[in-house]
Length: 317
Length: 276
Image (cartoon, rainbow over all chains, first blue to last red; front, top):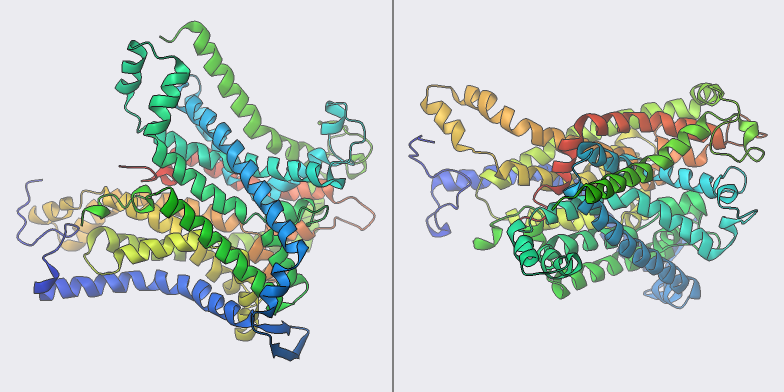
């Protein structure tokens, strides 16, 4: 553009903070003002309830008996952590998370490759991939539940399984839960990986081909290392998402057959049993586990989320 | 390099993807056309006797119709407010120099990773104290705050790409500030805002945890929550087919949005996801 800039264009780094002009100060004020509504709403719904949960988790407190409320210190945490049920739920959550993320990474990568390479019906495939993403999780849960259900399902008769009751055992229930979760969320993974694939320089692959690399070698040595950032972001987001799994479990088994997850345990304690103190303690433990996972990823694997989420160039300043 | 054979393989792979993504949806549609009595007797994929009865049942059930109204109203209001808030933040982040930019983005990120269920207990308490329990605002407020992160990232990634100098160029050419904004900036920013709106709407439409925890009656109960509690036309009937009819009804808008705005949604989900 040929416009003459008399004032420094906004969006560029402003003058050093030492000499804040009136203009700079006004800009600051405007920036904070514009951000205020969003930040306030996010704080109201998260910060206050979280602090409140921390506080209430120190009490023995049930809604049904508000007068019996008494301070028990870390007692609720002790109760939760020494209960085998808690650890069983941790294990269930871990298994669901590990299996879904691992499978989704493989399928998601295959889907991304097809979307990247396919010439036939490219748009149709991309549209179809978005359908599971848009479908309400509860509906996906019903669809898969009814497909495997003894009463309504076609799976048993199609595959000659007779009267196999999928929801009467822990592992078969978990398989269906995992299947629904995978169907619903693989599109998200594949789109992130597709964006990563687009970043891999095409001539690198060609050079490798000229040098006689097989397709598998190209994939392992050229493609995957070049899209490491995309893979890590996809894994981080999906891991945290799967760790909070709730809807599928609620609809399919309500936590029966040892399929209860940490989210479901928290919900059952606070809402169903109205044991607010104990439930909040489990909720806080769930929150801490999420923080721990995020920290391991961000510090351990150096997932640069600032860069990853479009805050490009943020690191220069 | 692309031989005819590999071409066919890619086409086959595409076809497999189509089947995998569409099949469960098709299954729900088939169930919704079965007679309630077929459940437990006819275990095929296709309905034995096609019928519209389930749709009639669903629309005659107050629980579902009020949930549908609640879902549409609550999701739309939350989307509009959320997108306006996110647009303000994203504009400030893309164009203004002020302290706390990075903090806001990190905070939004933290919210996106937050285990929602941890908050349900305390919110349940708080909402009952302030009278927001089982009301529209009681769901709209949490929806906004948990949809904001995605909207903020999408929009700030998008706004960063806008050539803002064009606004000044237009002013140099004699346009007023308002004209420059309306004729130059709005058309450039609109697609991003629209994409953020779609993603926010999907988020609200999909919610289940808040829907079951913060509501207790048809005053504010949303569709996913209503589905989980739906018992059918009478207690002597399996609710399966009716639930599926209701599920199809709430899936139609999603399919229409996906079919119409496929490219925008893909751009939004991957915007700035892995640049650099």
